[in-house]
Length: 272
Image (cartoon, rainbow, N blue to C red; front, side, top):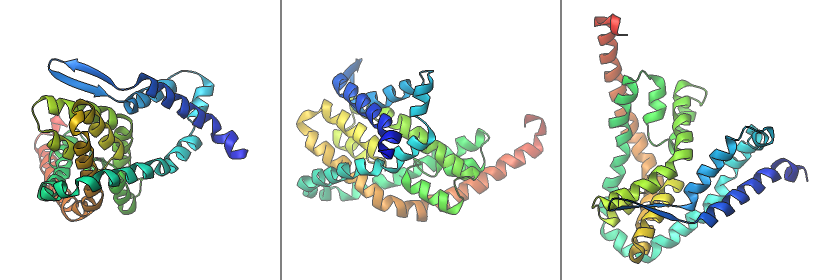
């Protein structure tokens, strides 16, 4: 009864949001020739944010720290059946996936993009140690674990990775559900888009692959299989790429870029 009283209202709210989101169902919008599929998952995120913004004390109590931590702690129980389904999706298409296996490996190098493109921008915006945490990757569980172990989450690096983690959790699925149909509409092959959906985040991958499958229903099995395989590979190999490629690359770039920026400040002190 104690736990029911403490967490029951939150669970009821979640069920209500889920019900409303499923009733809204998948909505397809057209922007020119491009179709964008918005999933119930995205509506659920938006509704949950809107509910939180209601200026009422009972609502604020629903979203207190204790309940938020509870939700985060037991999210894995929801994700495990989803991961099992991914495995089931991969199995029937395993031969096709193996035939393009090298492409999946090359895809993993895309995880370095957050450093190559994001780190310089973050440093130019004035971030320093925070940039290490915020650009190591997409800020999912692997990066979160590494940063928390090496720097702790109370450090500037920890604040950086936590910030990206929260942004990804809130907006990631929305962006990915829109981005996948956009790429398809721009002429990219559905297999390539499906493979690119596996970035280490189950919610982002699900949003991208299901919105893509909704637009190409006859290839939905292939799309879900390729996305799931990419996701599983990212979860496994992505950790090693982070340790042996991403971290040294980030350290090298951080040292040299900050050195250049600091020298510029010395030469042009008025521009600080």
